[in-house]
Image (cartoon, rainbow, N blue to C red; front, side, top):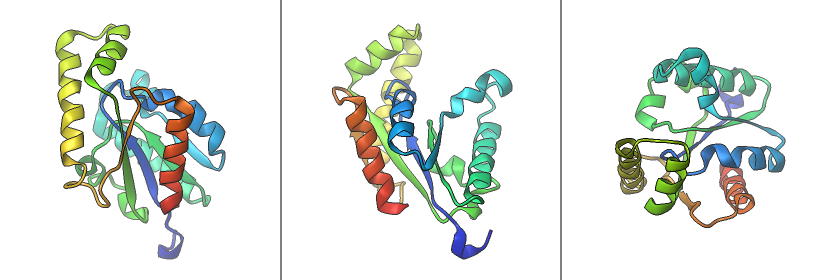
Length: 167
């Protein structure tokens, strides 16, 4: 892949319960020219080896990029982890967007999944931290979409608008 043909990679991140998986079907409907993935789909095959997971998904995205298409990964991924991936230099830039919901909604969503209270609290704290570092750690600063009461079509539409700024 030549320098001129590099494409950006888009990551929709957020703490568990924020709506990353939920928005994928609608994103695929609205953005048929993009390949959109949920990295958690590999957990049953490779377990919780997150470093391997990130490298696999970036390799998939790189292969897609070599066909001139762009990828959106909807999963919790942090820039300092993505920067360690072997294939990151082959992308023009990696852009991040944060999905977020209020604590009560996150708690409700994670309780429905049968999560223990301690894990729910960890993700509430992580969600707060993502908001705190959005302007410091991300370049450009990471925008946030609140999914608390926002319809999935509207969330997908906002993600699409964000991607189109950089695609």
